[in-house]
Amino acid sequence: MTDPDPAAGRATDPTAGGPIRLLVVDDQFLVRSGLAALLRAAPGMEVVGEASDGAEAVALAARTRPDVVLMDIRMPGMTGIQATERILAEAVDPAPRVLVLTTFDLDEYVYGALRAGASGFLLKDAGPERLLAAVTAVHGGDALFAPAVTRRLVEAFTRMSDTGPPGAPDAGPPGAPDAGPPPGLTALTGREAEVLKLVARGLSNAEAADRLFISEATVKTHLNRTMTKLGLTSRAQAVVVAYETGLVTPGSAGGM
Image (cartoon, rainbow, N blue to C red):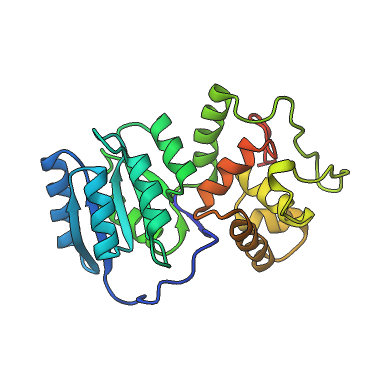
């Protein structure tokens, strides 16, 4: 269920072609060591550090500059959310991708991590093949899950927290009058807001391009510019912003 659309807002890793450098973060020794052993045995992957808590993860990420961080989300002390925020805020470009590890998908901690810039999440009971595929996908800039999966998580928690403006209008079908982006998105052009809206509704880049009668490359360009203007680090974070600003409201359909 990997979405082949490249996530916008991140340049190609200059070390592409070399091993994927990984930092494994989990407060449970057996889980952490098991993940690290699995990754070390996989071709094309290199574990550059293991951390038992969020604070250690922040320090190790700064020192080792991993490509991907496998981040346990629920840890005592500094949580995975806080560690994700710190790692991405302090990272030297290109920032690492953060892959959150969780025990169940509809988890408020996962939602918080996506808000903080994590690129995706993976259930801890996923098998070795799924883990390795997820690491490869995230490192390559692909969205880890089909867009509808992230959308379902975001909708669940925007409904609970009611963070979006009450009664914020969602856009009508293509060609309908556009009231313009909500206040939090005034830096965006009308077309950038349209692209973000469709991505947040669960459409892939190719589907958004078809809906707007533009090329897929143009959709990617608009999404890149949107993420740069809003200071976002992942496609999932862009979906969260679209809901929390009221650009898209829970329950709106993507026409899929």
